[in-house]
Image (cartoon, rainbow, N blue to C red):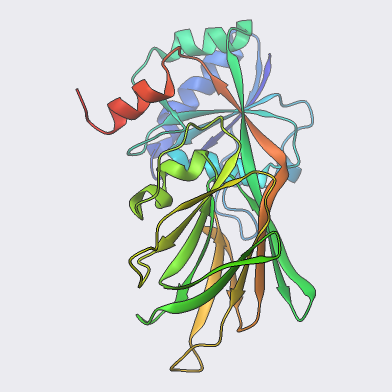
Length: 285
């Protein structure tokens, strides 16, 4: 591997200090590497305009937190590239620790000494009056939640066109195994081994004693019908993909969620198991 692109979160990597060092090291070793600060803060893409990525780029290195890697993976979903995240953020389940020996890590990249993990993604489609209004993909989760205000919303959930349940809640999270340690975990959902193939649906603050997470097969299709608000008619819901790409929903809209045909290919350089990473991140000794 000898062609790289670095995408950095400038609020984490101040003055692109670490990104610059990585870029220089790779170039000094004879590799091709670009660090273009114009990748950030554009209107259409959260971090990266895929049209600006050279076709021969094999690996995208993100410097920031898990959010930086998530958005880069979504922005570059049509590119056949590998992703390596370097953590300059907080918890960091996806990104490698920036305190490790960066030079040794980069040498392993250059020498092809790494493993590749394929992470499942979700596809979401919003239908209004039977027509597709918007669609997008997510590596972590697709979240439907109330848009402003503090009143709970009503959702009717169908699985494979069969009625499952009606939820009175602040929202619903549909997460991948990768996303099980994100918002879903905060809402009381289970932790899932990230290489699994399944979906986790977790209600957010459900007004019910049985509002628990449900695990579905990756072959299932989840449909969420947005119901008419019970009180103020101008209350809305919203659907977000990995926290962005939001669409405001109307009553009777349907959000259809299933496994995407696309996946994110992530580079793994250390030999630690997911359970060890989980133990370290959760602060257990």
